[in-house]
Each structure stands twice: as structure tokens, then as C-alpha cells.
Image (cartoon, rainbow, N blue to C red; front, side):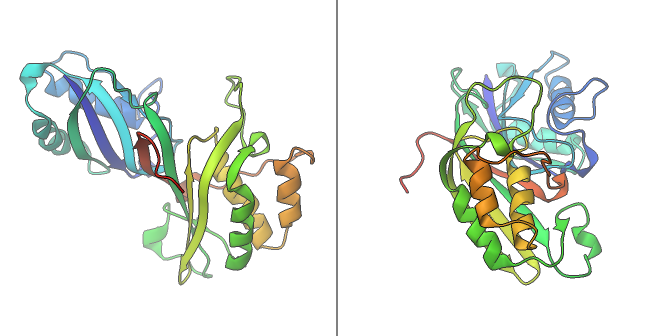
Length: 251
């Protein structure tokens, strides 16, 4: 039986999603728990994509094949949440067709990045946002508009060590909203390059602090500016909100 799992986790205490030598990644911990609940038969869990150490998820998606006799999907929600540490929670579990793949069937993702702009960061926000000062929210919105659409985001990605044939991506929406000192940057796209969202955020913050201009971002996006310093926003403020499957709604 193939299961489609939707889960959330606080990334602060994990080595990211992707399985690591020595364990400590969310994938490792989930596989261990599912193998135990499957009566010791090894269960392999495949996620929709990686999140780095410190990055959070509100709607990560994974799939796994489990023995039919171990129970219906609702059993797995209850059982997993009873053995997983509280920083990881299974939100939903459903049967999936054998052709479903959490990564390769995905057609888009939504990320959010949180900024705290007041002089003092409340302790309950520590590890859950980027504490920055002197941010012009209107400038953030102007910068966000530059990135919307289909572009070559080569200048806003890091090298993971594996060559990427095509660095063009379609960023359907990039929006900025604020609630007092909390600023929320939301990115909806068909796909994202390695560290792309965190590099977009870092570049936007530079504009919002008066350290760069919108024209600088346009030149970098067009490949007309050499990038000697690729700043990356901290992982603390990044959240994987949703993984989309099926055709996107028309804009």
C-alpha cells in the first residue's frame, strides 16, 4: 500500500529533511518510526524535496510503501504521532496510486519567509524568523515584482555539486504582507533551485535596507551583472508551506 503523507516539522533541531550519514534528518527519523510500526520491515520514505537544516515545514509531502496488513491510513497518523518527537507531526495520510511520487509528481511549491523588523526579537520567535532592522516594506514589494514570472534564476541559486541543465523557473507569485513588525514574504512557483528562496530574500532585504537598488536586481536577473557575493538569508525564517499536485489554477 502506498501512502501519501503530509507532515509539519520545526526544523531547528534537525539536520534538514534529506537523510544524513549518522542520522538526525527528518527523513531518517520518519523512516525509523515507520519501519518500527511495520513490524521491522524496512520502509523507505521519499519526500517532495529537501529542506536545509533549520528550515521548517508546514506542508511537506512524502510517500512510502507499507505492508497492507498494517492498517488503514488513519492508523498511521495516530501511530506515527504517538512515537515521533513532538517537533514532527503527521497532518494527513491517504492511500495513493502506485504511480504517485512525492517528488516527481509535484507540480509546484509555496514557501514563506518571515522577517521580524522591530528592534527587539521576542524569545518565542527565536529560530523562527530573520531578525532584521531598517526594512522598507514598500521597497520589498517593489523588489518582489521584479521576480514574478518566468526567468533564469541562475544568479539567485547556489551550487549543490550536481549540475542543473535548466535554471529557468516560473515564479507565479511573490508577495509581501506585514502585521506590525512581522513581515511575510510568500513565493509560489512551479519549481525552485537550490537555496533560491533564501537568496531572493537576501537580495530583497538589501534593497529594503538601501544597500542595493531594484535596477541591481534586474541586472542580476538578466545575467548582466557579475555576482561576486551571493548572500543567503538564514534558514530560520523559511517555511515550506505547500506542495502542489495537479494543474495549477489559472492566474
